[in-house]
Length: 65
Image 1 (cartoon, rainbow, N blue to C red):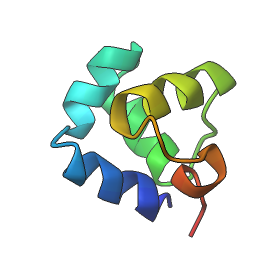
Image 2: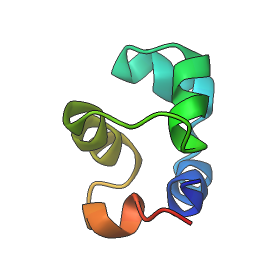
Image 3: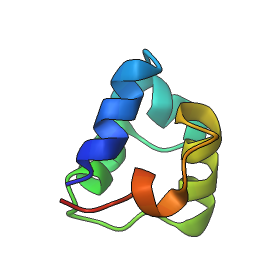
Image 4: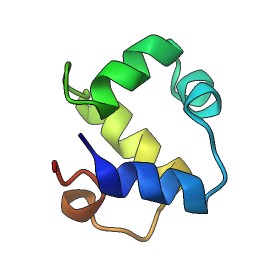
């Protein structure tokens, strides 16, 4: 599970539904990825960082718990 990502989403006031729409995947797919059931693509990682927390290091934002 990506707890840091979830925390940064809260700080950025963006829901899973909104983020899924912005990166072009379903809400269910995003939930699976955040929970660690499936992997993020490199492009998704880059777009998510740009939307959620552009100044945070990728390693920190996508640190698996």
